[in-house]
Length: 135
Image 1: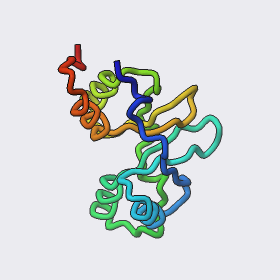
Image 2 (image 1 turned 180 degrees about the horizontal axis):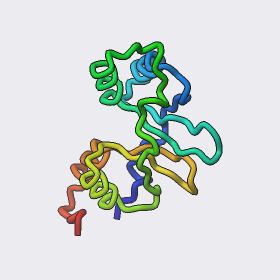
Image 3 (image 1 turned 135 degrees about the horizontal axis):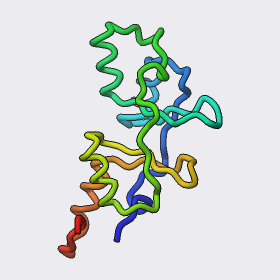
């Protein structure tokens, strides 16, 4: 039984909610990632997530100025999260049902990692013993 914590990426790249889109794009390029976790503004806030898609939609639809628009204004918030102790089949179902490609992973309500559709597919492909993951 494979759990989210077994396949999640622990090195999560975060960004301030007050950063500009240009700063987010720069961080994504430097770190080679397609999404950033948007930090909480305060203790009782939720994490957000910003992706290439959010950024592209904003630039195209709003003819957005990447230096004037903040990450907070366009990120998905609250980001959909899942406990690191959950089986990956549940994470996969959640992604499919919600039409999303990544989940923030939490441990006791704090950021523990991120898991993507690619991570799950990769883990399924590595499991060569023929066991059904979705049973």
